[in-house]
Length: 318
Length: 212
Image (cartoon, rainbow over all chains, first blue to last red; front, side, top):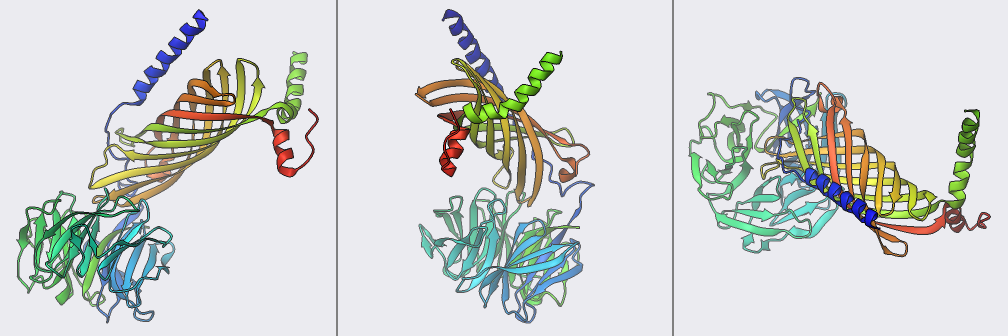
């Protein structure tokens, strides 16, 4: 028995030695994304949603702003394009108003463009959509509510975010931005003009984290990789920068309507600059993070894209 | 030499029959905390933490009083997040594996070697990258730990596993396969049924029990 006790004691010490090794706290780096590097077989494109009823198109542009392809238009099977979200490499979702639905769109060099209805059953005024590519859950603006759908198109909650939740009250919400840690930024175009921040990390319960009265009809919103929040205000044609908690609002581009008139979409270009859509004159401008316009011409000016209401970057498999 | 070869052939011929008639079936479930390291092509390391769950069905090959060996079929799920993840950018992985292990139990000490075929997905989501990669790999390694009887046929165990794998270079557009190491601490509950495979199939298909 004594010998057995000694053996057990040694076994326990042996095991704890390994436990300590297994619990190291090295932080490390990210695993190399396969789309990066010299051996990459994917190309990044700017995807523009054309909200004009005479275009109703989803159009791909190179990062230099050259027209590459009209991926889909909804002039026949009617729908006004209101928002885009990236579902994964080569895959995007398109939010459509009237008829209200979400369309799936896949684009690869080999297969070309494939589309299908992703889910319907929406109602009200449909605007922006955001998708968490890890879970496949999507968030869609539907009048004064935000609906959540799982990867199979089944609605989660009814609605997931109702008009009033805590201190956040939705009034004509327009733009969405979802962060990797489950924060959903929502611009309130109506009411007193707010940016609401919701915690949507729990699929069963959303909560209102903060609400900030800000700007004049805020619309497109994007959390930049530099840590600042950028958003556009359609009512006074401005581009704003704020801290990630929506404090410290600063106007970085103000009323020059010959350049930016009625901005509605904003996105970070892979080079770190901002892309801002000027919906009233159908242009997309590139500006640096301090609000200075890059170049003398818009990055995108193209008759197939009218009233660009949303922008996304898409990795496309070549 | 000739005799030993004959014995080996005979044992191989009769082993399935012996297992069928006398090998008792057991079921197990284990929940663990995993630490994973994967080497990038440039030599930097990506570290992950996460949870892992494994369900298993086993057949005892030898069942003496203090010594037993078992062959177990396992289904393993591993969910990890990169330690470098931030609010702006995160990377997560989901790995689903199926395989087998061969284990030995001596008194309370248990050890063995496992082998898994794994289907995995890694996602990058955030302000810098939005991408995912789907890949398959094989993972193998040893485990060791302690099992305690908590009821007549139920054991509670603390198991440490160390497994390694090579991730396919073509899926990561890398110059060489990426090496992966995984260390897991499991809490395991296992139940012995005292039913043999023959009993089990008789029960399912309603046939008479094989002669025991």
